[in-house]
Image: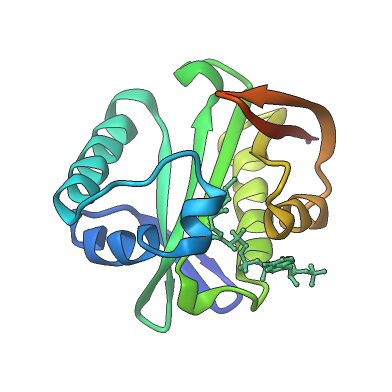
Length: 164
Ligand SMILES: CC(C)(COP(=O)(O)OP(=O)(O)OC[C@H]1O[C@@H](n2cnc3c(N)ncnc32)[C@H](O)[C@@H]1OP(=O)(O)O)[C@@H](O)C(=O)NCCC(=O)NCCS
């Protein structure tokens, strides 16, 4: 568990399915992500797969908890799911009720510290849609540098990197 300023990060659980499903139904989430689950059952299945990935691939899926409530998730994975890699990548999604309060920026800074110290990573990558203004701000706030702009499945995306 990681304690931050005004939030807790704890490992993902099946009981997070409700908060996750609520977040996935939001318009801004649908715009920001490449795909979202289409039903609660599908959302729950994805969470089960994520928990399996944590055990098998060393990925870290954290639920963000604010005042006891589900406030989103943050993920830190090894590049190519290789536990020996010194490179990682990060993803984040904030529940609509908790956006616009600086939470994503604070959580990402905390996860970067964790990745560079506890996980001994040297580099962390992030990727977002070129249209995702809020996410670009979060990424810049955390000191990432642009690697390239490219198309993924026909969508313009920006790849970023942060070195230790
Ligand atoms: C992107 C996202 C994670 C940002 O979370 P957040 O907690 O609201 O972010 P913060 O409060 O730390 O805001 C970061 C900055 O973005 C700005 N911002 C927030 N929403 C914005 C919007 N809709 N348009 C433009 N800027 C916005 C904030 O003002 C802040 O700017 P500042 O640092 O200059 O003060 C959240 O909107 C989200 O979960 N979106 C849907 C999923 C998604 O797109 N995930 C990223 C996939 S790569």
